[in-house]
Picture 1: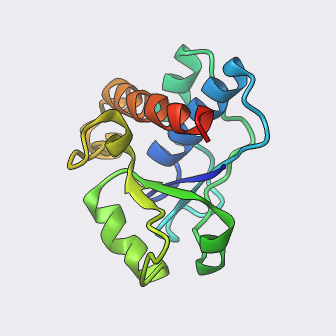
Picture 2: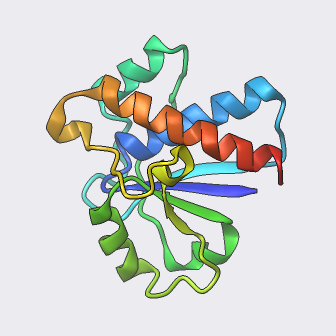
Picture 3: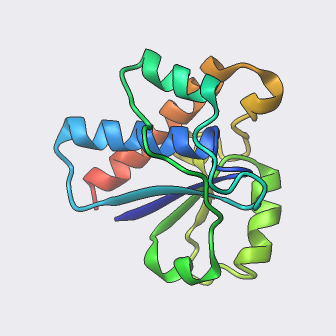
Amino acid sequence: MNIMFVCHGNICRSPMGEYILKDLAQREGLTGHTIASSAVSREEIGNPVYPPARRELAKHGISCDGHHARQLTRAEYDAYDLFLVMDSSNLILLSRIFPDDPDHKIHRLLEFAGRPKDDVEDPWYTRDFSAAYEDILSGCKGVLDVMRNG
C-alpha cells in the first residue's frame, strides 16, 4: 500500500503523519509500503520539518531527519492508494491538483480514527503540537489497521 499524507506546507502535520506511520509500521514489521508526505502549496518547498514539530516527534522517539518539504503533483495520483489530508482547506486546495478522484483515494486522516468530519488543527496557528501529534497518531493507528488487513 502506498500512502501520501498531505497538508498545507509539508513542514508540520503531513511529515508528522509520515514519520509516525513509518514508525508504527516498522514496529509491527510491516514492509513493502511506501509512506510519504507532501504539500498542497509551494511556499515551504525545500524547508525541513518545522522545529516544534520535529521536537514533538523526538519526544516520542521518532526522527524526521532529512525531510524537505515538497509539493504534491498530479502525476502522483496513480502512484498512491491513499491521500490523507489534514483539514478541509487541504481538501479544497488538493482539488486544484487532482480535479477529480475517480478511485476514491482522498480521505481526511481522522476518518481512520472514526472522526470523518474532524480536522487535524494546524499547530502552526494553534501552537499545540502535542494535540496535533495525538490526533495524527489516532488516525495513523486506523491506517495501520488498513495496512495490516490489505
